[in-house]
Length: 201
Image (cartoon, rainbow, N blue to C red):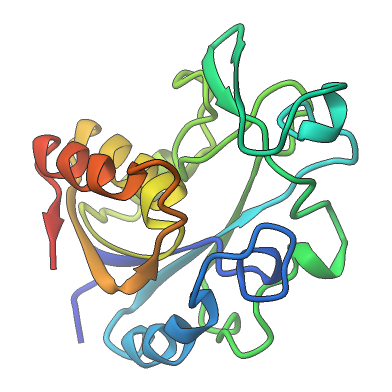
């Protein structure tokens, strides 16, 4: 058992990111049994959940003529326009049915502000608006994080890099993540995580 100073962060293991979902990550459901098994080694477990309102600004459907997966400039920088996904209270936003959600101490919902997307478990995409996770971990005395989930090259990467910048000791367990790999985004994410001091296990 890890001491209470080490938390498992399980990122966005939701139906819309699994096969058959609106933004399916190849093999996204294959990591669930391994994540459940890993939970037994941790006394602190946090789940994150993408939680978009209808008509979220990051949805391609809100930008006439724009193709899903195209990139546009938002006030806070480049933003991928996604298919509508993880809409609040929809089946797609629900956690994968086999994921052990009972073990979670905390569920962090992100992306609920209509005008700003949120990949990271720590900050919205403006890199300024906090989710509250940092404060929660610090008040519990947790400084070591192991991250798993979906997708390696977006929400996992942004969470890991932000956590490292905040001074946490971060490991990403790559075999329990799956990637979208949009135009080489996986290789770029690996480089970015390593540069930030994240351990890839």
